[in-house]
Length: 208
Ligand code: C5P
Image (cartoon, rainbow, N blue to C red; front, side, top):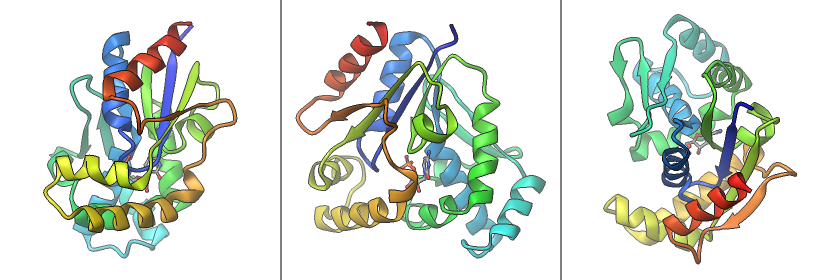
């Protein structure tokens, strides 16, 4: 059978590190859907489009399509020949992305692109197990308290932990609609676990 493993969860729950580790152990690529949403937000900002103008943004995506390169050593997102990847993990994109991700036309465009990617793979995001790949082989949903997630972010980006925690809580609130666990997902609280601990737990379930 063609294996699709979905790993969803809240912002900064460790999804991409976990998905990449699981994918490497299974010798398959991983797919970062969040990177495509970030690329859509970056594209809107670059084109000077209002973040809530669904018609303008979907027309823009049709004319200048995004493309996800689901590489095992790190995903990259392109618009035409332009590699947007170095400009996607910034505070500006963090602030813009939820508004763009709330537009149904943008979600439909990204869903189609994700479903066109050749399985097997590990897909990571918010709604991989619910909307995009409801028939996935195995589904996981990662959580952690806002404080634990903020602490992890401080280790990645140089910033104030309270400001980060506030921004994460705000993004949770804005993303709540597209970020619910599938009924058949395994919930994992990553708070008390190491990265390798989470990866091992998932591999046990997938290989069981
Ligand atoms: O996973 P990451 O934090 O990089 O995702 C960035 C943003 O993309 C999220 O805050 C959310 O607004 C959006 N997103 C989404 N659905 C997904 C993946 C990401 O709405 N499947």
